[in-house]
Image (cartoon, rainbow, N blue to C red; front, side):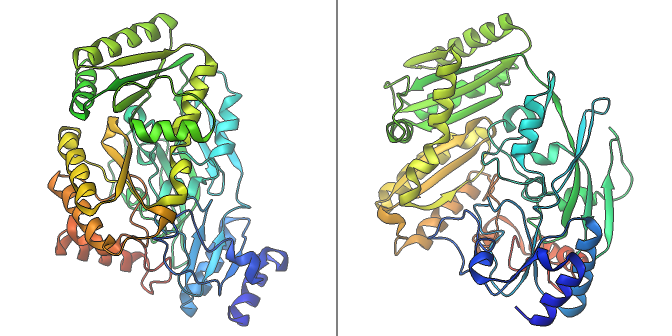
Length: 459
């Protein structure tokens, strides 16, 4: 990294908060993207650790004036290469901006800095009797700023929506160094164009989120788990549809191929509660009253049985609930050594059967294993392409194109939560028209006229 740039960064944040040693810098240059898909990493970077918004503003003003690339760094949990540095860059690490500012029980909001981790929020509300933050995409090392710009989802989206549905207000530093404040604690705000919602899901190319005000929700007293097995994917999809028609919204509904869940259980030495069927639906339910919880169990099981369920298991003890959750959480790690790519397409629930049938046909055609686990309640399916040693097949691009064309044929989106990042850019033309792509590029140019903030990402 240019010595003049390093010196200026030291002036802004202090010498102790600028890292240039290559070995130390390298840990900030990558994210959790599968190694077969990860873009080539550049470690010729300086890691800068600001402590306040004004310092980030000064960093961006300097970088914009001198055409220096900047990449904002959160927890590094992205699976799409969004945080990977591909050219010499100033890496703005948000780790020091980790203060929870206020819990407002009147407005039902929590205000925090962009570097606050999901773990901090979880631990904060574990101590709270009646409120919690509902979004939990998985890795508790994820930071709030990253959750915002990646529009994080996770298993609870079926009830609470995604990150976009939780964000009330943002403080953002633009690529030009200007500081803007967007949104507020209002229930209604119909003034002007909604810039806040442009920032959410922008994957770190329009600005750096320094503060966020997030919605918090009432906490249910009783929570339970239910596993229902099916022989046929069409029956599983139909059961979920019928459950929704009854007005039931569980906290989570997960679709799991039996081979994947049994592999995960074996890998961590636990026992999955059912060996019946080919597919399991895993329900997490929560209610204010215990009798309502058991009534929900009965209703869900009844609907599933009407749709040819082969087995069901209610996890009444906290130990059983924990075991089921641990096994489900381990599905991805259990496949990691052979994981080439983790495609996370989203399709309308009405087209899920068609989509999953098509995935099966593609797997046979290309002679690859495609393991499917997904958030069936919101149509976000995770198709993991597996190959021994995670070696990318020679015909991978052809295979991926066929999957993404199937996604579009099923009226879906290329990604439901992982984002486009730096690994899916070439596929955007499958989903968007030339006009839409042009508008995205023009929006980027309005925010970032010199293209210094995380270039090569999202669009």
